[in-house]
Length: 273
Image 1: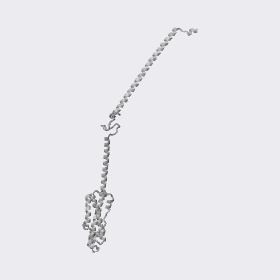
Image 2: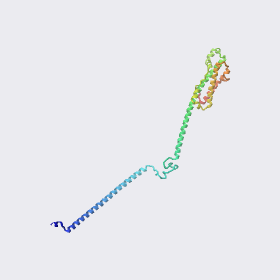
Image 3: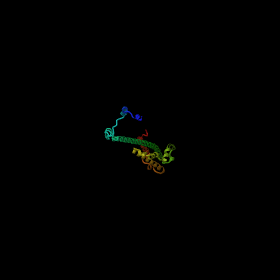
Image 4: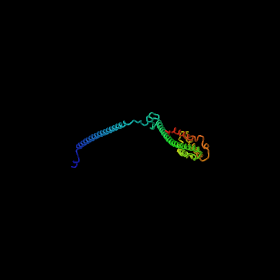
């Protein structure tokens, strides 16, 4: 009985083998079809991804082209436009530095600016010096006018004293009362010289352009000093009038000397206008 259970008909083995082979072929065909389909799906997916990537790259390229269209064209490095020499029409060399013409123009502008600044400063300084000189000379003119009045009084007083032999008792009372200031001025004369000291110490003397006028002013003050010394000697010493004063000193000479200098100051600076 056991031999019957384990032993089968060869026909059955062949039928089972045929059915197994058919089943294997069907499985293999189904595997191949599935692999083929999977391959087609993979190809489609790769094609779609490649198309989307190309589309994105085209879109990016279009955007970059639109952005670059609004920018000025720049010459590429190493080209002829970027290697121009300083003498080229564009005026720039390969390093982008400015040409010699630009530097010379800038230097010229700086030089002209400095020259104009110095010229303006010089004009302001000369104007300031001119105002200072005019102010000091105006003080000198006013002081010389005061000295002129004192000189005229001293001349009249000395002439009156000499007429009465330097004796005040012989001078009539009414005459003495009328010329009292002249007689007192003849007793002692000292010219004013404060403005002259200002002229010397302020530095305005060096800025005076009319040197001849400056010399006349200094000589006028020296003349007044000599006149005052002569008046003092006449009163302190028993000396004749002609010995103390020159031939033109009392006959209007001292006053005329001061008047001449005053006219020159007025013509130069216009104090009387």
